[in-house]
Structures are given as C-alpha cells and as structure tokens.
Amino acid sequence: MFWGLSSALDLYQEYIKAFKLPDDAKADAEEQPAALNILICGGADPRHVIRTLAKRYTHGCKPKLNFYLLDGCAEIMARNMLLLGLALEPPESFSLVCKAHLFMDIYGNSLLRPSSHHYMAAKARTLLRVICCEDVRQNVAPILNIDALKYKERDGLETAFTFWQPKEQVFEIQRFWEQRVRALLGPRYDHREGAFDWDLSMSLKDREAQQICSQEYRYWRETGVAFVFPEYEHCKPNKTLAAGLVRNGRNYVNRGYVGDIQTGPFCGFGLRSSEERMHNSVHGENDYRATDVTERNLLELFHELQTQSVYEHDKTLSRRYGSTKLLMTPLLSHNESDVTESQQSYNKPWIPVPDVQIHFVSSMDILDMQKGCSRWDDHFDIAFMAHNYFSFLSKEFFRALHEKALFIMETKLLTVERKEQVKKFESNVKDILKEAGLRPCINYQAINAKNMFLKYKKTLGGDGDAEDKFSDEDNDTNEEEANELGLYITEIEESQPEDIQIKQQIEVHEGDVETECNDALGQD
Picture 1 (cartoon, rainbow, N blue to C red):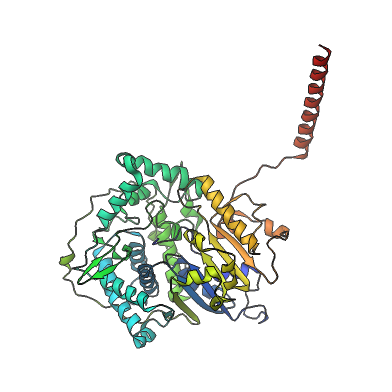
Picture 2: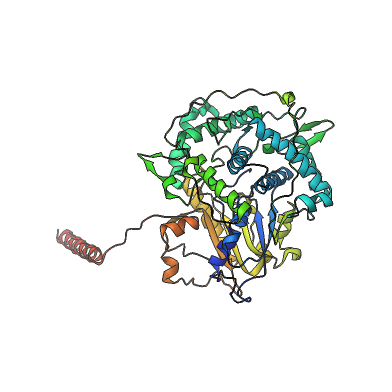
C-alpha cells in the first residue's frame, strides 16, 4: 500500500520503445507527440515519476509530460507529495548521500532517525501551506496540481500533514506492526524466523528478487525497518505510514498500519542496477544488499535530477554488507514530547522541471474510468496500473486511453502468493487486455519469462483477437533488455532434429510391439 511491488520505470522510454519512435530532436514532428498524459493507478509511491524525470535529459525529444496520480486515500497522496518534495529538494539543502538516506528512511522504515522525523514534520508544514495557498504553491512547488481533488480529499491532506507534527499525535507503529505479524502467522508466530526464511527463499528469491539478503529481510519482517546502516539509530515513528486518519477534537483516530508486511520496500529501487558488480554473489551470499543497491540507484537519480548529467558512481560510497552479519541492537524507545530542537523550515522552491505537471486525481475517478465515463475518453497516452487495482479493470476502462497508447500492468510476481495464483492472475489480465483489443508489446508466447510487468499497446483499429506478428528482432531479447522490460528469461530446451527422429522411431517400435501382443492374445 505504501510502496510498489515492481521496479521503477522510465515511462517515456517505455513509450518510444513500444511504438519504435525516433528519440531525436530533429525527428519529424508528426512522429513525436507534443505532450503525453500519463496515468498511474495505485502506484503507491512516486518511483515511476522520479525515474522518468531523472532520465528526461537523456532523450533527444522532450514532450510535455502530464502525470495523473490516482491513489486510494489522502494519506498516500500526502506521502507522495513529501517524497516528491524530498527528491526535488534543492542541492543546497542536503548533500547527495544525505538526501538518499533521508529518502530511504521515510520511504521504507517504520521507525525514523530523529533528523528524518524532524524533516518530515518541517516539510509537512510547508506542504500544508502549499495546498492551502495558491501563491505559495506557485512559488515553492509549481509542478504540483491539486485542482482535481475534492474538498474532502484536501481536508484529508491537511489532516495528514497536521498528524505528522510531533508531541500530541502519537503513532504506535511498533505495536501495530506486531499485531499485523501475529494476525498473519497465527500459531506460527513463535517460529516466525523460519516462516520469514521460507517466504524469502522459496518465493521471492525464486522470482528474481535474489538481491534481497536474508538478514535485512528478516529484520524488516520483525520490526518494519528495511534500510539499516550501522551509524544510524531508528527510534521515531514514521507517521507517513498511518492510514484512515480521522480528527476527533484535538486527537486523531487511525486504522494503524495496513500496508505490506510480506515483500518489503526493496522492489522499487533495490533489485537492479546498471553496475553488474553490485549483483555478484558467492555461494548464494550477495556482496551487496538490496539496501546498498537502493542507495546507489537513488544517488544516480537524485544526481541526474539536480545536474541533468550522467552520474559516475564513487565505489567507496557503496559498502559491501551483503555477507556481513550486522549487530542488530534493540530498538530505542522514544518520547514524542522530547522534540525541543529548533524547527528548521524546508520551504525553498523545488528543483525546476520544465514542461512537467503532476496532477493528483480524486480516488473516486477510478470508478468513472471503470464505467467508461466520457469525461476521460481518449485522454491518456500511457497508463500504469498496480496489481491490487486489477478489480477496477474493465473493457470500458480502455476508452480513457488514446488511440495510440501504452498500457502497463504490474503482476503479482514479487508477492509471496503461490505460483498457481501468480500465473492465474497473469492469465486473467491477458484475457481482459485481449478482449479490449490491445496488442502485446512483447511476444509473451515465445519467451519463457517471469513477468514483473505486462506491456500492451492500443493502436488505431487494434484487434486483440488478430494474430500477433513479431519480427525476429522483437523475439531476440537478450538478458539485459529483458531486465529493463521487467522480464527474466529462462532457457527453453529445444528438441534437435536427431532427437525428434529418435522419438519417432521409438513411437513406431512401441506401436509394432503393441500390435504383436494383441495378435498373440487373439491366437490364445
């Protein structure tokens, strides 16, 4: 609920790859769109937005981008605003490493460092002014647009930002986390470490999440703290993980923690890196944790956002903790009333990103799209949908897509559900997309792969029942390209002509033997 279960994508790169458009500023204007409307349903975090913006400088053609973020509750919208504000924080506020660690802290840890807790509260006060005053929004965060939100949802944003302040608003995340784990495991709770190892070894690592190390995964399942470095202590509650906030006078009522407790926040930035050395392992022990890969990827993305230039990673910044057993000390207790440090304000204008707007859409609009409401007809060029929003997918939903559009569906690959359920989910998605007339971007029938995403495209006069035609170039997908596409190729053993001939001879011989036996029985 608070993070996605798939890797971050450069959505513009996916679009030009799907339709094989030239990525050149000198290309014919008719071949390149002037603007792209991008819908992200249930993304749960801004990973796709951050990566798309960071990689924007690499493209020769830069159309205007309009992101439409649709999530289930105001608390997730508020959290997305906070993470976007952190990613676009001007370089004079933080060093690159400090920004990456701060992002990791708020993004995936149930408990924060005191400095991270202070930033969360201070930034929430700035965001509260941003959503309440148009002049402040234009000055600080002109990239944001909340015009489509209902007043009730704006009130929900205000409630969330106020709840994130210290002192009176207590959020007992440790108690909520333990209650969820106990409810999930039941009688297996006393043997929970074995259950955690089973989920990691038999499910996640078998589904291309080998980068996650057992120690960091077990510690996250036990405490909710995913990203750990030896020099940090986590003791303050991460209030951005609260949901269902209702104000009751001066107090707040919430639903506790209702997010993911089985996969973890490692998928968005921690599974793949452009440096292959970070994926080295010896006897199943990784050199680097998913935490270290996440750190390295965030350093790259934040550098590109700030400088619009290629990032060269300093190898001394990456610590090889994959096979190191860190001493996990008991978590420190905290007191919400001990916040006496000076309250710094983070109200500087965000890093400017020309020709980009991020629209926050009402959660009720997903129902209109599901019914094929004319207000959204022919509106989006790219649409991404999380696996837990599959129930909203219908044939009428695709009326919201432009006649030349890309649709990306997240699968259940990185969940701990049974393989049969994962395959059934993927099959159901393919059936709906075929019925709606969408065509696959990749020949899924020819590639025996584990799909993190299903990528389909809508074309003018497209027919999902028509026979798909793929060139040899489309089918010749190497491992590196497959990882970028969210595919993980496994080898398929092909029968050689000699093997086929031998099999035919065996079948003929078996048929002759059976005939002779029947004749002998008939004579008896």
